[in-house]
Length: 378
Ligand SMILES: [Zn+2]
Image 1 (cartoon, rainbow, N blue to C red):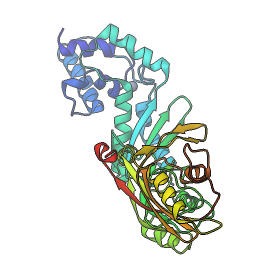
Image 2 (cartoon, rainbow, N blue to C red):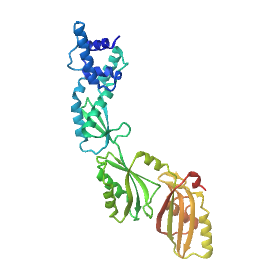
Image 3 (cartoon, helix red, strand yellow):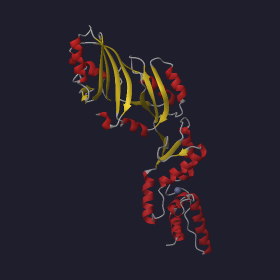
Image 4 (cartoon, rainbow, N blue to C red):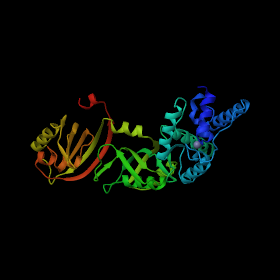
């Protein structure tokens, strides 16, 4: 059947709008907008029939059989999406939609009867149209892979649902106190500035409350549902660094990929631990302690943490003894709990190994090192 015959059949059978008519023949000239195509086809069929002096039996266009006239309301939906996005900061967007089931099944029946060879689905037509005008009016980018925001138009409910991509901020922080978790300070300020619904903090290993750091502990914060994406990170850094308990090195924007990479890195942590005993050590004691502790090098310890068992590996261990103080330099794989190792449930643990109680004067996390697996255990 010739194209003109097919088109004529469709417009004689159905009350169908130009957009939906054009869409049925979309792939013939995809670049020509469906509405334009539909209008040209209809006009051409009309002229052709007049030319052939045929009786014209085209259906009137009142309520489009295929779309229920949603394509006449594109401006309405674009405005609605714009309003919904008014208080959101974003660079890129994507439009999604929930098309009523009834229209989807109508379209499928239509294809069975009239052919599917050149058609485009109503959903992609609708999404593209809204996206086109939104991009024109807002000057934002459409991004099919990683949009900052996805706006989903629910036609039946006449509602717009926003799916906002998380915002990732990375940096490093020093903990200058033995009281509390200072990561909360960073989390809170970023959550407040981004108007996010929730922060999720990721970092390396564990940093226990009584541990200070002299190095910057790398972190990535994922902010869920942020309304703002340009936070003014320089100012936020200054604001955080006014506090004595915490200082951040840099803050910068990051992404999911970086986070995943960070999670899989092989890293070791080095601690400096100062312990105080009730009296000075004797010479033989010193020799014995040294022997026992250095015997832990290149070994794993068994740790029970929050119902989880871990087996961190001790890469290095140096011991210095100064009067009543035992000073330990220790490097382990991450996940290591220094407190558990000193006097907790670790097997072995230092207290049991030495057989004497002590006071923990200071624990400092000195350094992180990235490693390859083969370096880690050699
Ligand atoms: Zn239509």
